[in-house]
Amino acid sequence: MPSAEHITQTVHRYLELVGEGRADDVVALYADDATVEDPVGGDVHIGRHAIRGFYGNIENIKSRGEIVTLRALGHEAAYFWRLVVDLGEGGKMSIEIISTMSFDDEGKISAMKAYWGPENITQL
Image 1 (cartoon, rainbow, N blue to C red):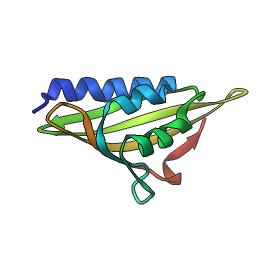
Image 2 (image 1 turned 180 degrees about the vertical axis):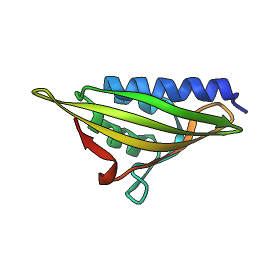
Image 3 (image 1 turned 90 degrees about the vertical axis):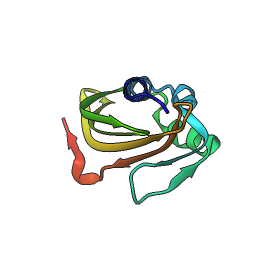
């Protein structure tokens, strides 16, 4: 079972890679048969190929993520975080997100869900 420290490090690494727009490196954090539902209620991406297609949307986008609070217990993590996206020409937006991740025995992300909607987006 992955430790709480490993899970915490993976969540921080995930946010760092998302902020850098490094889709392939983000996908490498996932198990082969993982699922991504972002936002919850939308499409569920199953397996690394589908997950890579989803994260292809972050490439060439400048952003940064900051964790407000994180809990890592057992094989799970839940965290509230903020993604600030640079829209260019001085514009930015902030998205406040609650995410959950499950981890397999090797410490890879086996499932990720992100809870957010239009009401969680603020233009800065």
